[in-house]
Amino acid sequence: MSDSVTDCSDCTEPRTALSAAEVEALVRGICFKTGPPRTVGVEVEWLVHELRTPQLPVTSQRLEAAYAALRAVPLSSALTVEPGGQLELSSPPAASLMECIGTVSADLDAVRTVLAGHDLGLVGLGHDPWHSPRRYLHEPRYDAMEACLDRTGPAGRAMMCTSASVQVCLDAGHEEPGPLGHGRRWWLAHQLGAVLVAAFANSPLVGREPTGWLSTRQLLWMEIGAGRAGAPPLEGDPRAAWARHVLDAPVMCIRQDGGAWDVPDGMTFREWTRTGVPRPPTREDLDYHLTTLFPPVRPRGHIELRMMDAQPGEDGWIVPLAVTTALFDDPEAAETAYRAVKPLAERSLGLPAPHNPLWLDAARTGLADAELHEVAVECFTAALDALPRLGATDEVQGAVAAYLERYVRRGRCPADDLLDGLHGRDLGDDLLDRLHGKEPADDPLAQPHGKDLAHDPQARPHGKDLRT
Image 1 (spheres, one colour):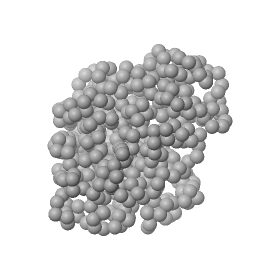
Image 2 (cartoon, helix red, strand yellow):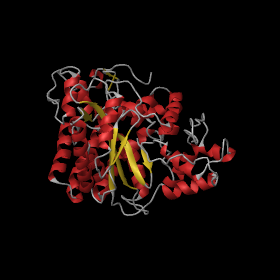
Image 3 (spheres, helix red, strand yellow):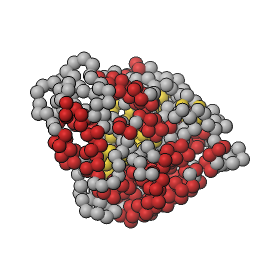
Image 4 (tube, helix red, strand yellow):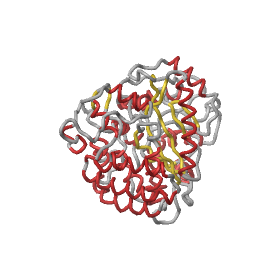
């Protein structure tokens, strides 16, 4: 969830105030930059754990020592630290899928080497199964974010401090219609997004107990609220819809030159432009406001797909990156995905993602949902067929094929492995395997309990429902 933000040392200096019309024009101009789809990027977030005893919390002092060492390591990707101490690598825009994979893989190797020297490791989970939210970074931005999100309940702190994801960044698309047109890609991202949530769900536990959701991380994003973490309606022009959404979204904070930042309660950016209180908003304030909106698909010149949980294994992040890129950038696969997800749109009831029944079902039951399962198999198969056309290596194709067989065809996701572990191996052993990039020792396809839990949601162990 890291965003590039500017220093506020001069944020109270006089600047040109913006009207609502000027805001709308600026947003329409900067958030969808169209052209032939040709670049790809990825942002991979990781939880940082003790290498040998991941259930123990890591002290702030040890994290700081490790991060100080990492800051001396030359990387091609931008390395940032999340509020709870999670690490994120954000790749530079790449001309191809394989260039992106090569860059991030090399950077991750370097990061893991440094962390191992401090007895720390990276683990791919959408939500920390053990630890309560604890903020590592204490900065004005995160102080204000915490104060703002606390108004809607505990989900905000969990999102900030105990969650991790794989975010895929793709060009907005062509200006004209068609499978690679920006309008089609925008619509596809919001419908296919539910399939990606279900297929890559990997966060079923909080406090060592099942939550009743396969992607608890996605549930937390939904609980933050539609104004902060929701998408705009899909009808009409994407630029106009997003510009209205930006204007009508609540302002998280008003930056100050020294001291705590103001955290207005419920004031939208549109209202700020009308009242000018406590001061008129500027272009810098608009740029900052855009970084405080967390929809599942975010336009930032390109489009960010932000709905997928972090994945297990050292290279688990490659599969969602490869599948998503193929389904958007290969015209044949994009057309197949469009046709496959079109019937799912009815289940959204016209409500924006992720606050609609389709996305709720995806986060709760994953591919145990028969319709999501059928669409996922079709989309993953189309992506696998497209990967050679995108120049993917045999290794990348093999990883996608293995995921298709291990999980998608069987209506499973990585969250099911963790739930299976509650019945067999100790959860700590499973996460140690994940820390070291190993597959779980138990074969998840050989169910010792007499039934496949992925195909029988009633048989899954459910803890409390976090929505209640």
